[in-house]
Image (tube, rainbow, N blue to C red; front, side, top):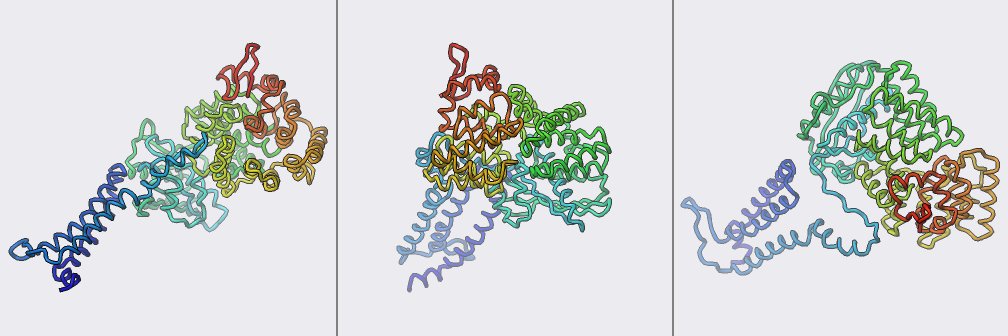
Length: 609
């Protein structure tokens, strides 16, 4: 009798098929059950290995024994069993090989030392394990007949996200990263991996007159299973209670621990005026997009909201945030917007001292004014109130980068990306930090991700990367692309002249410097950041001279590059110590200690290398 016939007679095929079906069902159940009880990842792998090893063992038992009415009986003799035992042994060996060599986690661990050894000092951090108590809130779909109501559905999702983000026992992906998936039909398991979360909340909003219906569903990302779904109906005045119901259902399902006032309420009620709230959501859409061309319209909407409800603290706060950024987009409004930002931030704090945003806006404003000590103090206050606020964390990180605290800057940027892993500006800053540290490959990945996410000026840092690799033609092209949105009221064609001067020969540099001087001669303060940044690349001494007494409209373009290796000569100029004093840096360093590349000499001057 052939081996095949013998296997068939001894019912080995039946046993094997039955085992595989049951094993598959058991593994599926375990993949849900183990994480639900917060079992470590290795526990599930051990369980699956045992299941794998059980398969050849079950085949051996099927071969050697037969189930009869009288019980389990030996088949008697092991004739012809040599080939079969070799097959069973081979299957067991394959199971061991898969466990110890075939898993991605094992492969990653095996190759990690080599990768780490090859990487420069600023190595890429490995992704953190995904916590079971983690969630991303995707933008809710606008199901209203009026498609202009999209701001409302976005706002509902954002309010729920903000409420959940206050729960210390729950990790919540940042708004920018979650909203990157708006309008896309991506596999939710892939979305969960990208955002580093175990659960996703998605939903829809239908608004008709004063009636609103919100539908929400909770999905487990590793399986794609729907854990919970519910629809909520109410009047527009009930919208905060509807959000509260959804947020509380999520915390119940994920079994998170609530503390303090959260046991009573998760979603705050910022205003009782539904029209004022609607205007706030419209303005917030502009703020979240950093749509500088429409900042004026957003501020007008918030001012209208304040006429409807003068005690609407979050409207004051959002005006402060918008005004603190307005000078980035139009240097001509720098002075007026700074005054308005401070005024509205103070009013917001007077109405609600537990809002983080007005402190963050003040911190950003003080940083722009080079009042660095006050900037860090107010940003610390914002982070004390809300440690997970992305804006506060990001502005704190970039200020550390600008003032020379490079190691703390990198750690702070990593924290931002932990909260909001797809925030384009954070990817940009972390990418340029990798490039500064010499880790060009990691820098390129971050910068390309920021560019793919829609950051228009990513090309500026990519040009530095191309230059570091010796590719000057590409560096010049990338600089033109990235610098175009920042040119403001420079004459047409100036961008190309500046790029050619930075990456070209001596005659091109002279032409670019002449172009900048013509621009500066006809412009009042503040100095445009584009002019200061280009000067720093071509004539550092002149750059320090024209910017030491007053901030540019965006000092990050000037101060952050000062700490690059290619600006060593700028830091070592005799004029640098005076620049540090007059620009407010020395005052900060006296309080917080010297930055990474500087020390204080016997004369009290900061000497940098």
